[in-house]
Image (cartoon, rainbow, N blue to C red; front, top):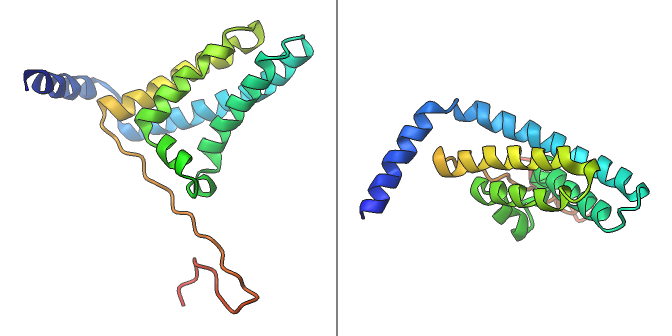
Length: 154
């Protein structure tokens, strides 16, 4: 009980020194976009520098970051992406993505970006206690069978 009281007090004090959550969300989103794009681009370049294992791993991790950040409504239909969408899990996952990026000199900058964007998501999830708004995925119904799109109101 004492641990949870001290933890909640520390969280409130820590959250009071940080910027607004909306600013942190924007910073985390743009940092994750840039990091994902850099991982894909520099992972591809590192393949040509004879890094046959790290290059494809960085490309895959960057692709996962971009899918999570850009294609969120589409990814919402998969349970894995709904689990990863939570700020706490996403932040820890992005920080873990930095490990293979540090094995080659080409992807050190995206590795640092993984730490930064993941750290901001961890702050949002654990310190600010923010919850990610789950996107709604509207499946299109078959128009040929006389059904309307699920986004239509009539």
